[in-house]
Amino acid sequence: MPESFKKLEKATDSLEQIFSTEEKIKNAARKVFMQKGFSATRTRDIAEEAGINLALLNYYFRSKEKLFELVMMDCMQEFISGLKIILNQEGKTIEQLLEDLVTHYYELFRSQPDLPIFILSEMRSNPKRLEGNLGIKESLSKSYFFKILKARTPNKINPFHFFMNIVSLTVFPFVAAPMLKQISGTNQEQYDKLLKERIKLVPQWIGLMLNSEIAIS
Amino acid sequence: MPESFKKLEKATDSLEQIFSTEEKIKNAARKVFMQKGFSATRTRDIAEEAGINLALLNYYFRSKEKLFELVMMDCMQEFISGLKIILNQEGKTIEQLLEDLVTHYYELFRSQPDLPIFILSEMRSNPKRLEGNLGIKESLSKSYFFKILKARTPNKINPFHFFMNIVSLTVFPFVAAPMLKQISGTNQEQYDKLLKERIKLVPQWIGLMLNSEIAIS
DNA sequence: AAAAGATTTAATCATATGATTAAAATATTT
DNA sequence: AAATATTTTAATCATATGATTAAATCTTTT
Image 1 (cartoon, each protein chain N blue to C red):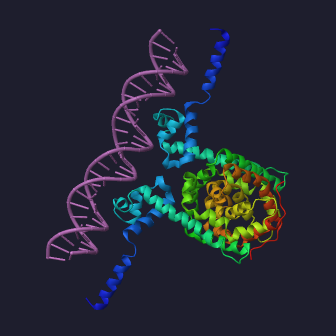
Image 2: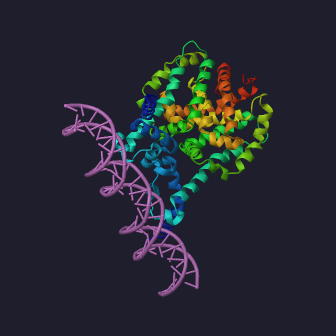
Image 3: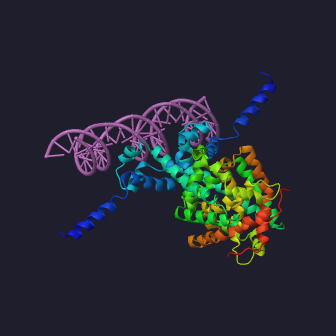
């Protein structure tokens, strides 16, 4: 065998080892849990998806439950970390921060369409989940964003309404995509176009709301 | 035994029979499926909730799956029927229709907090579900509401964006309640106050958006 | 090279779950 | 009142599932 072929063989081997068995299981578990939820996912499903032997799930992670907890914490972190980072960028206007935010979630959910509902379902079943991420409340309420939001909020309205609106307009169109596509009679491509337009529209709409004198009548 | 006591006994019997066994099972199934989802719900859970013998589930409904389908169709119908009715009320302004709508969903979700996410999860797992409700797309696209929405939509923006906004601002705060409560550090009572304020605020915000000259830049 | 440690495998287990069964009980019809 | 039909019950079944086990295999250490 020529030396050049030996080098190629060695390179192939190291590519094959990029994902350890533990990594393979975690990736597969993430995918299947996100699609099917905890109870409808069998350990056999994960093993098949990972291309490994079933017993390895217990060997590496001890139980289905523990594996799920790990995966869920990762997903929560991923869901929330963009919020923390973007809302603490100083020196930008609210509209600019919002455009960053909607862009971030557009891209995150486009690549992982099941992520939001996976998180929201788990939050409803186990509300204590987020308490593991103790930074979230502190981080958000002391963020640069909340500071300038308060400064711009019309009198007599709780500033949190605007945060609710931002998150609603950003996340819900992904959560409700199957339903909204059917109602509008659009396919995935057409629906995606709408979602992309909202990167520019949502910040403007929120700006509109903040500039108005609307009150609770 | 005096005649008056006999009459009382008869009245008690007929109260006891208000719910047939079939009804009891359906009601219990609805509750438990909504809380736990299909896979995490055992037929034994439903039987316990209904206070009946386990075998009756198969006697009356043949299978867990069939019972779920029945319950899900009911829930879908309940979720959607308010939309159809309210959006076809002629002679009202958009703001008035929206106030009716937000009120309707506020009340519906307040009494059944798990309903929206139950529906949305099922729609993502089985998007064909809504196709059984063939009236929805026709009914909505030809509704009085869509007619006046189109008339008021600024140029160059797909009117469907506004429908998405309406549904997002109305439904998502319920779907994401566990998370938003934690982020805002509010309890259920305080959060409910926010939701109630939105009955007046959401229609005004939507009106604002419709009146603006915002475009996709 | 042998020993020790780690990983993987296939079989098996203990338990849970949806479903079935046959008998008992109740309700309705004759 | 007896016969028939329907509903209910408790036990049992067939299968699925998360988990365990012991042996085989692979890797690392001595």
